[in-house]
Amino acid sequence: MTPRLISKKVVSDRLNWVEKLITEIRSLPLHSYQDFIADKRNVWSAESCLRRSLEALLDIGRHILAKGFGTGVTEYKEIAQRLGEVGVLSPSDAGILRILAGYRNRLVHFYHEIGEEELYKICKEQIGDLEIVRDAYIRWLKNHPNKIDERL
Image (tube, rainbow, N blue to C red; front, side):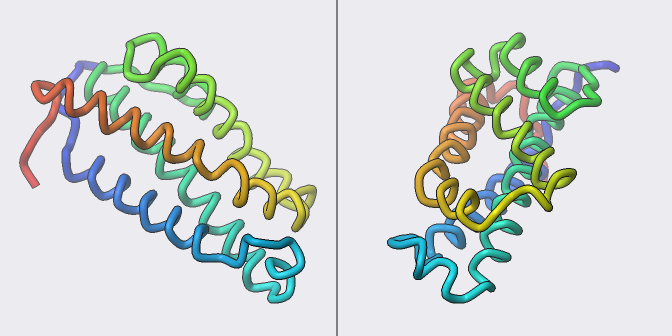
């Protein structure tokens, strides 16, 4: 693969999607587990928003690697590793994305093993990890305007 410019439109669309989904998760009744499970739609909303936000963060990473570095990846955890290797993510942020990639795989392939309490705890206590990776992408992109295709 030959490196090219990273599409501002692709990245912006996905970042906006992540922001919207995080806002949806934070709007759920997360002050108590009982309130969270009182309406089963909260559980389904949490799972859907979490899975989709993870997919979007990983799609951004894959796009940056493919376009900006000419690097193709096949595994979600490899996205985190490669982003760390090329300096898009710090070792700490790459580690967080690797964990998120693993959780994405659980949500998709082992969905039947993820219970309501686990979803509640993640949404209440760990949703900030999504923001850490999102913010790392934004910082890197701002620091590398020469890698961005500004055309919308």
